[in-house]
Image 1 (tube, rainbow, N blue to C red):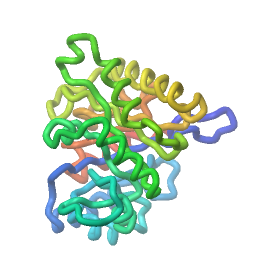
Image 2 (tube, rainbow, N blue to C red):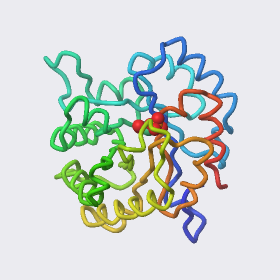
Image 3 (spheres, rainbow, N blue to C red):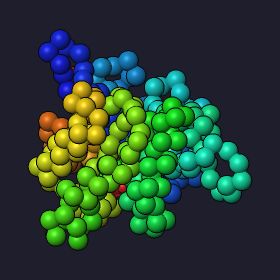
Image 4 (cartoon, rainbow, N blue to C red):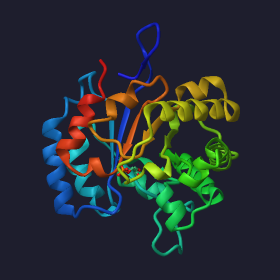
Length: 265
Ligand SMILES: O=C(CO)COP(=O)(O)O
């Protein structure tokens, strides 16, 4: 699975990440996990992409107890930049690590738009996550208006440069998700050509920020109305290393089918 090197090693392992957003009770998460684990290839199978579920904080502990022996990883949907202290309502990367999270989604457009998170705020969060040893799943993407004004690349580049400012990391410790805002939750996905074009552009930006080698190691995934009907098309593109899935990740059967379609072993 993923992009193969000449020697047969994988340069970038495919990643299927579920963003449940603000959905599911503890009981619903438990039911999902039990059903999902029955439907996916065995953890040792080289047909399996890396799988990460990013549920609400309240369900992390239950999911950990059910999924930990099956190699399904957990991610959070947000984190604060301080480690501890008087920050009512916030949660730190080290607390997420303690709750078995390997990843954290940062810079999602819903948080940028609804909670007013700026690139500067996201930069502080990415830095804190990296320092704590959690892999940031950094979301970037343009609005419809920005795309129509032909500003998509400029906006995405600015997000990358500002969110990654002064952060040293290896490409293996970063995932970038290209999520065009107009494709999120709308049923209107970007075409696979558009996704490839922007993701290749993102890789070229990472090359300038870091190096060619690190850019080649960084997984860049697509998000926005991904479902079982279109996942194969996205994964057929050279630079698309996986997907970040919202709505279609809420049903175990649907996410499991996407996982099975994401293998190319
Ligand atoms: O926001 C998303 C994932 O982070 C995408 O959501 P949908 O898959 O529901 O469009």
